[in-house]
Length: 160
Length: 160
Length: 160
Length: 160
Image (cartoon, rainbow over all chains, first blue to last red; front, side, top):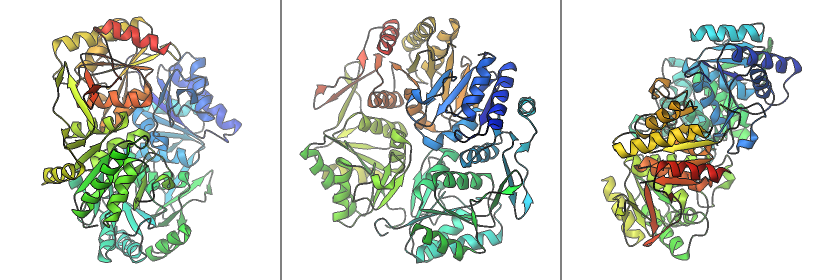
């Protein structure tokens, strides 16, 4: 891991992820590693695991910020497992740790990570994820892109 | 405060709240107190302050879970100020503390509270707040109602 | 609960508390309530439960900042149970919530609360609790007193 | 960084560290890196910075779990800076992240990290740090050793 390498978070469902979401996550992880960036995620299964596997396939560094207190909860592709013991409160840490966030699919946990990132001013690029509106009008927030490679490229560009 | 009284959270913008949102928040706070429930919120200004003022006008109990470490940050209608020092991480605590959430208006911080509540299975009733969709289809989550009195009544009904 | 009443934390072991420690905790809780102050604690058993029972016997308000996410974990004398989901991380919240801390007996969890309080500048009065030294010399920190009534009286005096 | 390398935390004062404490911290960091372990710390100055400098002199990986939300707060020898936004609450994360803790010198923040580690069952080896007692009798907890090299060797042995 290069000192102060860019850090990109990949967020998305740990369970019930579709084959398409898992493939997108793996491609995102690989693209992050190829770019020399560090992958941070929640460290569990589904989208998190697929992203880690993709990053490791390119020799990248993967950080898992776990909700529980047991390092053994991390998926097998996490290089550094940090058990936070904060439950869903660890979602705030994932987005704070990142220069940019890539959201793939997602349930309410993912929505909380998107919201916390946008609140903190961290750019979010999304593939098949939440669309936000108020009063019937779309609200700018998540930048929707068509595929994982574009999401990572845009995320890294936003980091400048 | 009656032991184990129901706890209802009111969430919404601390700044840039509209007059309509502030009026709704004050009405929500008053309705919560009238029902003998405890109001929990983020303890700061805007919607949080209006809700606390409403609850105090009916002699209710108001709890402010502050993001910072200084109790003096609480608005003047907070009975019990708890400085968490967790920043936006305190949003997870607000929804965990509540039996039900009433969302009024809202920015990305409010969206994170909605998402964390839905993730934790805490019902959310909303007035003029976020609308959620994926793939162009609305996603059930926030139960939109027309006014604050209805939101509180539904929230308390959901607590059973 | 009077608005902005003083808040005193009682910290000590949840398990394996001695009869003497439980009696001291109950007396501390009663003294806190008699003075019109609010009791905050970890909300579980042992010293926490005894302190809550003492406070309730005098009609006081008791706040339990629980480590888990289930309100039902609170002892039966907690008026307001706040499930933090932070595990031992909730210890930092207990001391931040308090104007003063009374420590009774205690294991390493209690020691962490004492340390976090002293770090935050919150005065700690102790009954039969930790003694601190470095390089063979005692370090000022916990103010050791002989009984719970004195601990609470000194704690409230420190709040001014 | 090797996948699942052992993680050793170095804790100690960020300010007012003595020259002796800084030298011990630098030696500890170097020994951790030489052993192929990862250094985790609070990421700021004093003992934390000296430990990171030592680890980097041996090409090691250094993780800084910062109390604030700004990555720029990290000292110049931190490879991966994770801003937690938890204030002193991040102390719980440092010890949870580690297989073993080396404590050097220390104020009350360090004492909280020692206590949280012992509470979590993480072994603590200390150089010139806190001595704990109750009722006039020393309490086993911190394993006092004479120098940093021994502390790290013992810490790594405890990780087995």
